[in-house]
Length: 133
Image (tube, rainbow, N blue to C red; front, top):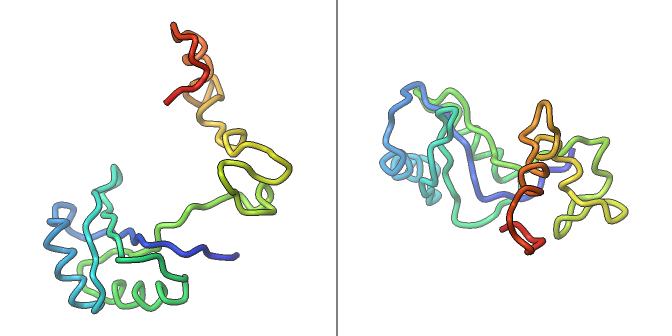
């Protein structure tokens, strides 16, 4: 699988209530690379941003250092993932393959039973504007 460059790392700590900004400073020192705290996820992980996008081989070295630090459960590159069978070509500008919108792969938006049925809600908007922002 080809990994795309990314500038974010997701880290889960043993302690669920660590300070993101203080951890960013501490981890920056350990990696000798500036990390900025971005946010805490709903699952209790923390997202940190590197100064620039880096190729996966560079990230692997950072992740190895992070995983060896006591108190870190896991550290992973924050990457957009796709089902292999659905994407023969990486998306560009919201389109995949033969002009198929990425939206068509995001069933959770339009599926009425297991998803949120956003299309149904959008159809009830009292607006002549065809674009939802």
